[in-house]
Length: 441
Ligand code: PMP
Image (cartoon, rainbow, N blue to C red; front, side, top):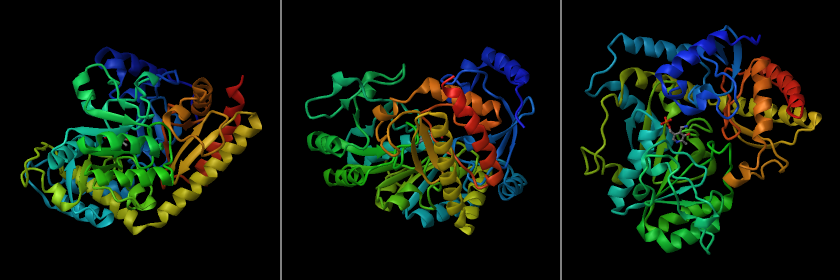
């Protein structure tokens, strides 16, 4: 099933590097942290990617989340094809935008929703809105959370030098060149799953904070699961007048029809979506309480616009995907069962090979950290960072050689789809048993 030949991927990667920075259009695709040649993909169907050299690979990235129904799902393909008959972009409103907005508001309880074209745009716009609505400048984010690549969000926690006596991390340095420190200074960073640090930060600075943005289940430091105490602290930030902004770009429609918010009983003021909401085409969205959302132009004073926003093909793919999920809520149970069995199988395979593994999982999101900590005890980015990334890289390559395309970084979630069946589970666990034996070689 797997092919060890990567001749065509190598040739394409060489060409790509001549014309595109690093040869890819989004960094993790370059396999930098795991080494080797990134596979260039020719096509994708169901639970499989087929690379340019003809290898069929069981896919665990699902385009980094959107493909919850599996690739090339007939309902989504047909909806896109039907939309295509009517032209590809209008620059004027259409019926599908209204239908998708009605569906999203019904499923999530948001009063209003605005469509954009990526998760980055969704978070960037939601924060501008929070600033416009509150008249405040500062935002709070959590170390190891990712909210897209807008300037003010490319800020990670700094070293211990920035940690003040209260245990608050405070303002941190930009995590990318090109982000002026004046922008970064408006972003305050706190530790995920540390309710005391958040309480202390809000006690000092809460009156200046427009929004606290967070991943309700983190996928971008590997999977981190919020503790009940941390969720309670998140809710407390509202008392300061700051808006609570849930970034459900990854978790929205994946962990339940109402995302992580529904699963965890959270009530954010604003929510950001992406990925599944576009069914594999470029869509993001933000929404929430009507009185806040009505600050957005043309209704209100906060400007936000987009040439391709509400694009008919993208709306059709999102509508078909969400309608399929709503018509088949049993899909979430099937995803849960598959991913629980996957976790169980990985644990057994790793323990047989003497490889320590610490698993974090919520529904169909899972990270197996290569480290000794007991399952569920990796709660913060510094916890995750203690993983054996070299061991993970060896395991990743051994999986790929056996036809399983795992997320090419220790600090990412994998995504299971409705197209994954016992066949793919068996292929994966057979590969995993062999791959864990390679970790300590
Ligand atoms: N927020 C979260 C939680 C994400 O996981 C991502 C992307 N992985 C983004 C925002 C940014 O989305 P996009 O890549 O569509 O800009």
